[in-house]
Figure 1 (spheres, one colour):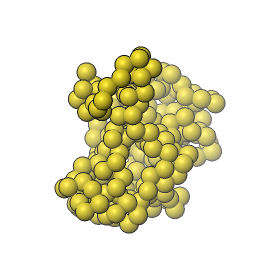
Figure 2 (tube, one colour):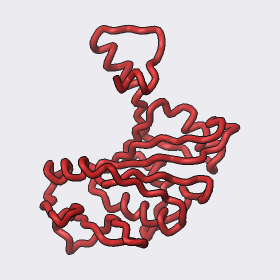
Figure 3 (spheres, one colour):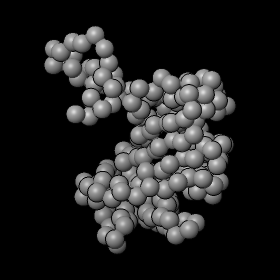
Figure 4 (cartoon, one colour):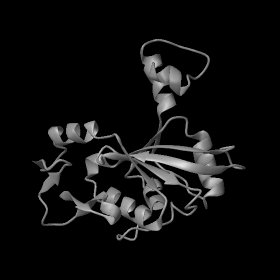
Length: 193
């Protein structure tokens, strides 16, 4: 799949697909060819630009985000997510979600307070964030997803993410491979040290 950048509502850049695009457009005017895999220079350029945040608090922004995610080539179909809220559990509520992918140059903050149905809003391809979260073709990375998934399922209309990788359990697996055993799980702060 070929993809390129186009301007979306408010001058923000969104990914867009078209059979006529044959290059990856990166902010700053540089382009790299995309042929059968991820261009290492393009990926490095995108990684350096992860300082932008976009608050998704309107239906137009949510639809544009879905379109942007759908335009990503298969190697980039990964979501790094975290959700915060009040008593984040089956009895609590989600207030904000953080979503990033290797193929986008920003972190998207999903505002569940201003836009409670943010996961249900569809893009131009008739897909929503809920569809992407429940799609097994997308890999979802979450640190300790137990409460996040519990709250999404019970308070957001039965959203059940599939193909989730728990980064906390990856840390345990790494320690076990190094022959380190411990009776407890490390928190995010300890894992990042």
